[in-house]
Image 1: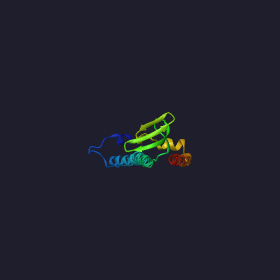
Image 2 (image 1 turned 30 degrees about the vertical axis):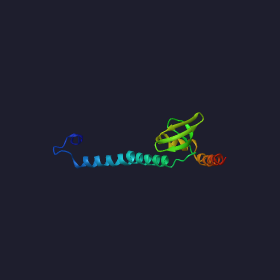
Image 3 (image 1 turned 60 degrees about the vertical axis):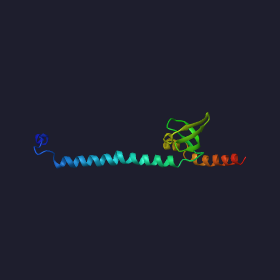
Image 4 (image 1 turned 120 degrees about the vertical axis):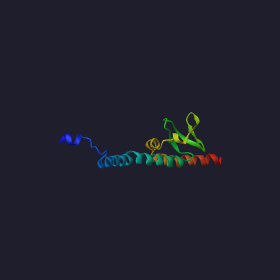
Amino acid sequence: MLTLFLQAQPGGSSPMMLIMMGVMFVGFYFLMIRPQMKKQKQEKNFQETLKVGTRVVLTSGLHGRIAQIQDDGLVIETLSGKLKFEKAAVSREMTEARFGDKAKTADKADKKEIETEEKK
């Protein structure tokens, strides 16, 4: 019986083989391609919603606050000064893990400080 399964069919590829290939492609799509596309979309939306004064963590591990938003990047204010980075360098996951809800409340406090400095 086992020898029957191991023998190749002379007619070429069987319909069962085509069905298995289709199932594998659908599996790859739902397990690998679709989640990656969803993650890229979330990352892009996060980068588009960045505002001045938001505390962020870059992919390199640098912590800072956004000082300026430009067409080609961001100016991040750190303890050592201001540095320019690409928007893609800001990591959504590390920022949320580091600051979480504190980032939102800290952003409001920073905005109040900025407004009072501008009034002076």
